[in-house]
Image (cartoon, rainbow, N blue to C red):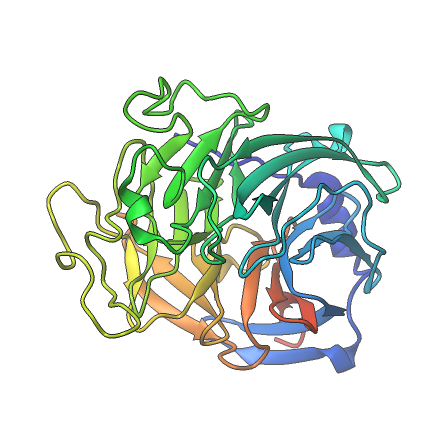
Length: 381
């Protein structure tokens, strides 16, 4: 069973202190099916942000597609952190996810996913680095992984990172706009991948000998997984990925399993033409949940926290197309039984969603004038 570790103690105390809370003018109230909530703007004016994490001192570290890594403190974004390896800003690619090592509080280690270029080809890479004590520079950077086959295409780089209890990394890469690659076991595209924190191959990987498939592959048949999380309570690995015209999916990747793209899908081509053989076929896994029409999911997390006991164990998915946060409830068997759509059209495209150590929920909006938002319990209720 997988388990995600998180950095909690100092960050919780800092967040609860309220020293970084937004003004009343930047706060909006909303009624949901189970509770009343407030959404406050923590920072604005961000340029195409992609990912956010909470640092132990309560500040936020944010990636921007251009290649900038910034720290947000007291509502203001820092100058770009120096030392970030060169990022290829191409199509949907750029500086993507940031994930903190479980021991970040002492070792200052973090991981980045990014688009890289070699000649005329582009692909996804994973990099490790150490953030300086003053938060101004990244040092000791090392590329841990680079996908083997690059292409000039600008689509479907993935790619978020989640960290297991043993420190190993799970991350996704899309089919790179070349759908058949998702069924090629000797191709990193269209896959959930698994490496150790030093870039080596975990013993649990199904193709670790490299003979039947690339050694880093955990599961295949994924179109463009842009969200990934390990539920810290159950240890379950969950991903959310973009379909074509319909067929966005939440999946539960397991070693050696094939999730079907483009052989089976609940979506159609953007032209309206059918894709593959239908919605099911022997040897291919079914999604835990799917959307048709698409909501264009950008990120996923699982809620555990004291602030919203009504939402305990719910799956949260940020969506780009309908500009919403989807809250999904599960029954005792793990099946999704209901969906509530929050903030539709209110804040713009939701690029990232993250449960903070204090139980509040962070959202990053998308675009060239984007914001970092925080969801809290309504203080008046």
